[in-house]
Amino acid sequence: FWTSEQAGRSIRERVPPLLTDLYQFTMAYAYWRAGRHQEHAVFELFFRDIPFGGGFSLFAGLHDCLLFLRSFRFTDEDVEFLRSVMPPATDPAFFQFLRCLDCSGVTLHSVPEGTVVFARVPLMEVAGPLAVVQLLETSLLCLVNYASLVCTNAARFRLAAGPKRKLLEMGLRRAQGPDGGLTASRYTHIGGFDLTSNVQAGFLFGIPVAGTMAHSYVTSFTSLEEVWPQTLVPVNRDHNPVDIISLTKGWLSRVCELLGAEPGKIHEGELAAFLSYAIAYPQNFLPVIDSYSVACSGLLNFCAVALVLFELGYRPVGVRLDSGDLCRQSLTVRHVFRLCSEHFSIPDFDSLIIVGTNNISEESMTELNSKENEINVVGIGTHLVTCTKQPSLGCVYKLVEVRGRPRMKISEDPEKSTVPGRKAVYRLIDAEGHPFLDVVCLAVESPPKAGLPLSCYPLGCNSTTLSVTPAQVTCLRQEVFSKGQVTQSLCNAAETRAKVQSSLQTLHPRHKRLQEPDSYTVALSEKLHSMVKEIQKRSGNDTNFLLEN
Image 1: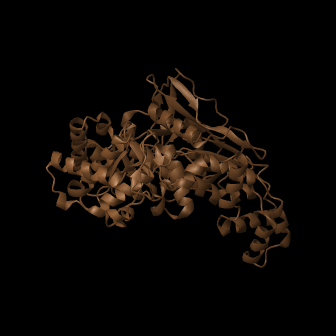
Image 2: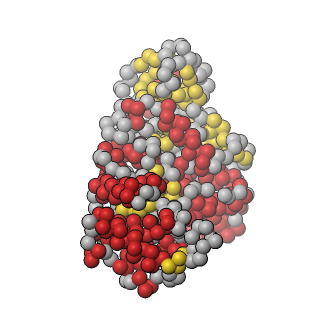
Image 3: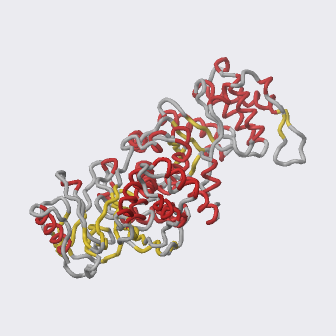
């Protein structure tokens, strides 16, 4: 696994301070020019709509955000490049200001990574000098948007697959570039996938890796003459190497007789490929069996080679299906496995695994899970890592306070209006332990108390008040970065993955439904609602949107 030092170095390479939009620098310069760059400001990061038409999202990317803040500083080379791209009228002293800039004055409060979250809830609060926290916007959004989206997508696939079936992420070749591929492998594992095909992700994040062969390997062989060596030493090495070609031919005849198959339809090149691979990896034999015909060639060739391995004391792993009706084919394959197990008295043959991979989407995963099948592992690539149902989460980063005074964006589109002021966020939990409402309060308010009624205003309900009595109350956000240092222990992928499963476990099933879930309520406290209404009222009469102290 990465050490902390290696992770920090990686984030500086992947997300340097220049990985942002140019207008962040032009705004920072204008603040600096006006002498406002040190004013204390507060921004919030949130998203407006739950992705995939679902009932929940997962928050991810915090780990990298913290490493980014800790390492944030400009090099001489960075500054010289900025000189070349910013308008010529830029005061040279500004570049010296940038050269000395860091995040020592920034404080970050955040929801823990891996937490179930909902639309309009402020996930992160970034506070500090105005110029600095403005410069952080694009990078933080970049780190959170895709990580949270693909993590949520993975969790939905996990729900569709059920808890027992293993899931393999295999989307690297379909991902949006190398960093997108690594991010996908990391956060799909956090979201509930068991394995990845991405070797680098295994190296960096400790994710179990898996994979055996592609169709190209199978089709590269044409005859048994290409198999070399043609012998295999039994597990009990006291025996001499065995002529595996002759042994396989004998087993293949017996399999064909058992199944009533036509030997003339068996593809010799496929058998050669299986044998060659089995000789190389006799304990890890899991071929793809649909290069030609599953029923007429691939399955028969597999059984013959697998029986040879069993006879020599090895244990093959299983097969992969990559085309056609996966459910129907898996039933056929399992039936043949059982016949071989019983007829040849090899109990373990019946428990060989079947892997299914064939452009699987959430819908086809749900359909697969609703049909009778014998698939043990599902490999998913394109629809998982590219999030084809919704390619962006749409997180935004909005100013809510400057110099201790609330700021509010008032839009003609009510959905784009922001909620002003520094806030605290509390999750209300019912008597059964399920969260049922997140309430956003002013930071200066006393927190809601368990067992006491609370009046609040659900977002999007046109000032309708709601009274609730929680059995438990938890504060969602905590300080995670201050004075240039990470103030909470950084979790690895496995720890965050456990957090995801724990958080999802508490969520009521009606919010986890993949189709037509119940909406989760997010509400404003009475004081915060009143402040919003007051600022909206003043904005109609005065161009100054500040709420006077």
